[in-house]
Image (cartoon, rainbow, N blue to C red; front, side, top):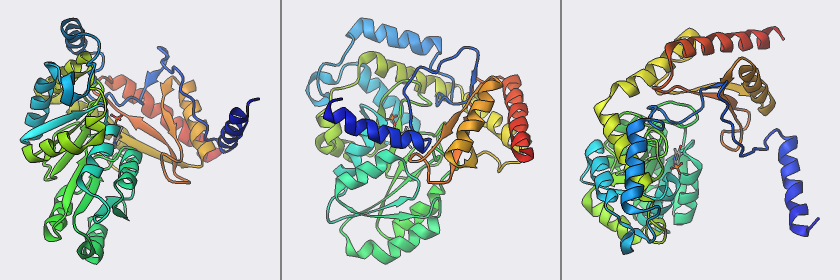
Length: 365
Ligand SMILES: *Cc1c(COP(=O)(O)O)cnc(C)c1O
């Protein structure tokens, strides 16, 4: 075996032994009902979204062929950025190649070596990478604990030039919702800027953050990431966010699909309401804390326990993912249920029954 592969194979084997090896394989199985998709509003298969995508490809071609600041800003772009700014109630928006690229470009464009970042303990991996890349001093506050954030601000803020506080609005693996008003109050008091990652948001909430990042790849059914904020912020990102400047624009089809999805999401608020209602029906039936979003975790502990539970649900006709470290902290491997506007009531009822069965089997085992 070549030297490189021998080294890498050993690393993969170590992951396999820990029940942590992942595989990127086609999991679409028409016989299984999926409770694992981030297509929260059920728009990825929407005929109008698909049609918008096809029309844009026909009108403008398959690719953008250059960076946004050269010739990559094709006509579908302004429509999307205007729709996003309107949706969020901000002056302007900037679309990036993905949510990952949005965070990794924006955070280092705002803070550097003389600055401070204070972030929730459970923020997404791409925020962690962006924090490191920025070179700023970083502290993490206890998950969803605005008082702990205030304590860190009080202790450390004065030693640094600028300060950025970062949280998700809806947490990706826990489904709980941040207390944005409390965080904003502390930020105002300590002269800090608030940035939110709304990748898992499905409704516009009262959001006081200066920098509102999100993705087009989940509720908006397409691909890409965005930042909404003041015109001044967006102009600064156009000139300094390296993942914006030095990466090719998104294909026209992708941009047009996202615009159509934003339009439908705004016109049909019942989609978001239905997704949340399904999740709450599920948590009420299982006596879990009431769902605050379409994401519901069921903590199993060890990796193997989560894998076994996922298999048991699969045997009952439901596709649910076991989420393991490093995506979630050690010892908190879990099933992550995602409810969407596309689910039918009977499917949710069937899932509730199946989860009760596997929980009973676990208790009696
Ligand atoms: C998925 C996700 C991202 C990355 O978005 P992509 O568009 O998939 O790159 C960023 N932040 C959070 C919280 C996410 O869940």
